[in-house]
Structures are given as structure tokens and as C-alpha cells.
Image (tube, rainbow over all chains, first blue to last red; front, side, top):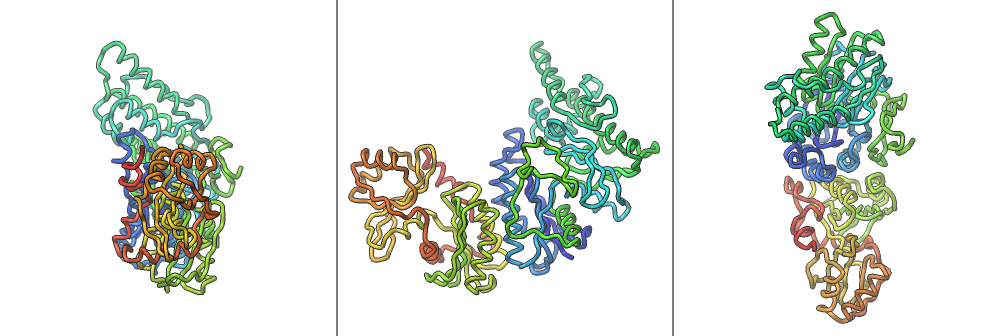
Length: 350
Length: 226
């Protein structure tokens, strides 16, 4: 079954074509980083405009790259749940038009489910259920146990900012540009991760919740103090110390969760999964006898259409379908257990 | 020319299937335009008995109107045209409103609320069933709109939505009587007529990627903004 997947949930326009859930024929991603760099973060209205401008070009490119005709597509999957409302709207409108034009089934997917599914796509059958998934990006940070496809158990999530958002804000404060992940990582390579003792939020005890707002504030306070003293801001040292704090929290809680639940397979997905230090830390733990670690390639870690196509394939196999009345939901519960990991008021159908 | 016309620029989603100027089917519903538009298009096509593959052209209102609704409308039309490989034409909501004016209207002012005491507006001469623009479309503040009304003069029929306080202010400031028609939204016939009038400018092949909502066109929203 050839499924086309569409993701416009945030600031990347992604269209991917996947055969039978894991054979990626194309995965075209148009980044909007240049448009958001001047603001030091994603501006929803700008993101939506760019999706509207580029979506059809990306769609054409994905079909061309896959070497297929539109008529070869068997079904259409789209991130309809979770993301920026204006951005989701463009992808859902395009996906529904595609389904209408081709007279093919349509399935709406929870964006985070796409990220979780990406872990299994790249594992070539080695990653079976249940597995622990740390999915961490600019819009979410959560630890879930994937018991089966579509059945997730939430172990912990961020109570305020997502880790990726903290990267963006700290990068902006340091004048490093956008997106924060890659620029902090590059800058941190030149710095001393022990130069500043930034807090490791919520690391005490055995809880699996996250919080990055306080860490962000700690960085700001440190920079304020240095600036007031008239000394030059040690940008690389701050970047390295901040990154060390984030990685310590993410890796420690992930490994603790695996131990607590007796799970021997851990996957990391989402844009922050690209972080080399996080990957190396988890790999080192694996080498030291920890759980097996699955790290999808970058193209499946960032927001992309292929992961949505893969997740869509699984839902379609179960006979699930969306109608042409599918709407976009900026906040939606995840999976069959309807996990709610945002403030309750954010859910439209709570 | 078999045409599917889509509009979701306001709180209403509409799909019209037409053959030249003849309306074969129309479906229209108020609500979430993202939720409604595609299903209405499917229903209108079904009602008309015209399969999507038989269409000669796809048309969509490109503005002015609701930001989100225009994204929905334009993206949907572009994708349909792209997949079935048909020409695509973008329609002005102001033109569609003008074509809705009574046949003997004379001078017509089409209005779409731009909020903040401003209107997207355009002026037309309507005679013998023909609609001819007489002043450029743009976003006008109330004083600018009053000035334009005074310049054009005479009795002017208004199509679209104009609030009563604004009507009184415009009449007072321009000295021009305004006749508010009961038409606040284009008829299906008007959508079909504007699509036919625009067919020469239809985009084909990769050109269709250029269609964007009006608010994304600098010369419309920025240069005319006060």
C-alpha cells in the first residue's frame, strides 16, 4: 500500500511517500528556518503563509522523487492533530483535496504519534513493542511507553516549555540565531560544559516529569549578571553548560524510566533527537549494559511527511478512516488511551 | 466549460459546479470552512453528475477575506488542479460581489470588512448585464472610502456587508446616498460568471503554484494599507 503523508504542524512543510509502512520512497521537507531566524523563534502566521506558498511545490517534488504518478497513491495521511492551528490547516486542506481528487481513503494522524512511529520505521523490524520513547522537540517533550501501535502510556511530560523551545530561546538570548538546537550544539563544542552550574530541573527523586522554564531563566539570570559586571559573555561556555543540563535531564530520566518499567528498548525521536551529545550519552549507556537505543535518521527525527505516512498505514490497516469533514486540532489527546499532556483547557473536546 | 468554484473566504463554505454561466449545482454551509469545504465540493460534484475528472477548470476565491479560510480555499483548489492537471483561476471576492448586484444597478461599490474601521472595496459600472471596474480595488480607511465615494458621486449601490454606523458616516462625509442591497454574499451565478470572466488568466501546470491569497500579495495589502 502506497501512502502519502503530509505534515505541516509547525514550521517545516513535509510530504513523504511510503510503501507498506516503512519503505520510504520520498521524504521532502521544506524548511522555513530562514523566515523565522529574524524573530529568534517560530511565528505562527509566518509559518502558515509559507506552508500555503510551498505546499504544492513540495507535494509535486515528493511525487516526482518517488517516481510515481498521483494515481498510484492508495491513501492519504495527514497530521491533523497537535501543532500550530494555522499551520495544520494548510496540510489538512491539501490532504483532503488530494483524497477527494484521487478518490482515496483519508486518515488524520496525531503529530506526536508520527514521531513515535518514526522509531519503528527506521529499526527494520528490530524494535518491537513495548518500547520506551522519548519524543522531544520544539513543541513537546514526553516519555511514553508504546505498548502497541496507537496504545501509549504517558510516563512524564514537560510541565512548561519543551526542550527544543528552551534551545531556541537560549540561542536567541546568546545571539546565536535560529533554530536553537544546531547553533547551540555547534557553539557548545567550543565551550566548557562545567563552566556554569545550571540547574537540572526535576531530576531529584523518581518522577519522570520535565521542566525547562527554570533552566531558561537560570541562563538569563547568569547572562544578566555577567552583562551588568561589564565582562564579556562567555557564549560558548554558557551554550555548553546549558546543553549539558538539558542532556543530563533527558538522558537520566529516559534511562530511569527504562529501569523503572523494565523496558530494554529505548527510542528517541523529535527534532532534539538530532543532538549529538544526547545520542552519545544514550549510546554510552547502552554500551555499559543499558537498554538498546534506537535513534532514527535525522530525516525521520525532524517533522516530516514519511512518519505520518507510516503511522497512517498502520491506522488504515485497521480499517480506520477519516471523512472529508476532518478538521485540524491544535491540541489533541494521544492514542487509544487519550493521553492528555497539555493544560486541560487546551483540548477542544475535553 | 465545466468549472468547480470554491469559496471559504468568509464564515461560509461554498462549492459551485457550473458549465459556462449555467450553475449545475451549489452547496453552501456555514461553519468551520476547513471541515466543510471538501465535503461540499464532493456533494456539489455528485449533485451535478460531473465527475472531478470531467472538469475543465478549477476556481477559488483568493480574497479578500478570512486569513484561515483563504488558506483552505486556495490550497484546496491548487491541490485539486494540480492532481487532475487542470487550469486554475483565482477570483476576487469583490468581483464576485459586484456580479451579484442587481442588473440595472449603475454604479456598484463592493465591500468586504477589513476590520479596524476599514473596508476592502472596489467600484464597478454595471450595465446591460456587464460589470466593468471603475476604480482600483484596495483596502480603504473610512475617510478614504468616503473620498472615493464623493469622487465617483451619484447614487451608489453597495453589495457586501456595511455596518449601519459606517453607512451613516460614509453618507455624511461623502454627500453620496448609498443604497444597501440585500446581497451580502455572492450568488452561485456570480461565482460562475467571475470564473468564466477570468478563464483567460487561468494558471496552468507549474504556474498554478503562484496562486496565493490576496493578503500575501504585497501590492494589495501593503501599499494600500493606511
